[in-house]
Every structure is written in C-alpha cells, then in structure tokens.
Image 1 (cartoon, rainbow, N blue to C red):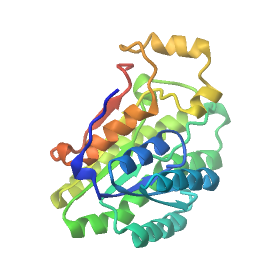
Image 2 (image 1 turned 60 degrees about the vertical axis):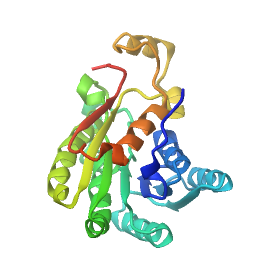
Image 3 (image 1 turned 180 degrees about the vertical axis):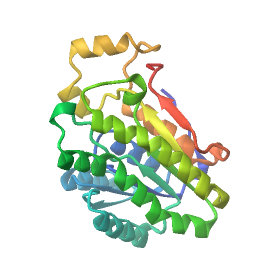
Length: 253
C-alpha cells in the first residue's frame, strides 16, 4: 500500500494515550513518520520505552512517560512532563482501552468502576488537560477511539461496550464546547483490528471466519488503517471535520 504524507503534521506536537502496543503503537509510529513531535503514555513501561528508543534511533522526535491512566493525578503529571519536553499538545489521541471479556452476571460495582476508568474516564481528563493550551493557540485536534463492538451489538463485554458508546456523546459535547476555539473533536470507530493481543486471545479460525462473513470487504483489518484515519483527522485536510464518527470496520455493521 502507498499512503499519504500530510505536510501539515510535520512538527506538530501530538500526545497519544496507550501508545506502547497495538493500535496505539501504530498511531505513535505513524505520527513520528510524518515528522510530528510525539509524546505518549502507557502503563506498559517496558514496551513504551522500547518503542520510544526504536523511533528515536530512527531520528524521530518521540518522548515516553509511563502512566496508569486510571490515576488522574498521574495522567496530569505525565502530560505536564510531556508538555515540558515537547511543548503544549496541538493534537490529542485518546486511544488507551482494554476490551477484556466479562459476563454481565459477574460484574461487581468495583469491577464496573475499574472498567469505566480504563476505557472512558481518562479520555475526559486528558482532554481537560490539553484544552487550555489549544484554546490559547486558537486551534487543535482531538481524536477519541470508539469501537464498532456496540454498533454491531456484540455481547460478552457489556461494561466495555457501555464505555465505548459513551465516547460518542463525549466527543460531540466537546466538539460543541471547543469548536468556537477552532478545536476539532472526532471519534474513530475501529472494527475488529488484528493486533497481537487480538490474535493471541480471541482470533481463532472459527471466530475470524464468522466475523468476515459480516464484513463487506473480505480482508482482515490491520492497525495501520486506523492510524491512517487518525492522521487524516488531525491534519489540515480535515479542517472542517468535527463531531463525527469515522468508521474503519470494513463495512461490518
């Protein structure tokens, strides 16, 4: 495949959550290859440092801060450290999440709260942390990662799908509140993306065959395609795109 280069992303300061592996690592790498200055956070310190070292070794501008995003004070400290290192964020990608399977009958209040913390709450406070700098600059782009799972009516992870459905309401509210400052807020909606985690835990031949029958396109979706949509929405090419849902699911609704 031959992908686009976005000149407007060169030198742009980008913060990414959950950037150490999977879709997040692909997003970090894609922005770095565009010439952006990328800061990312993740609970996986080993993976995060390895990715940052690889990309900086290739001459890219990348900074990693370890962070458990369930701890909002830690999130704020990590973002402050990134801002000190690379400057205030001009782009925020709220990617971090975990689609752990669980049965509705087994969910306790503590488990429910922890899943919301993991999959939704940090997106709000990450946006709150970067918005003042974007307002001062008079522009910005925020992308929240949703999920096609709830659009499809998937079962087996009801707290995850609850959180991901809420992302869309949050996106549209922030798009309205921040739009007057020329800050754009969108949701990217991945389908079943073939990360290493998915391949290891759930992508059995039977599951893949069943899923492909639901897609319009006959190919499995690699993380790079989610990253390319994120790049577009954060570039000047998408200057009039906000409050929207951008599907990367091969037509699997």
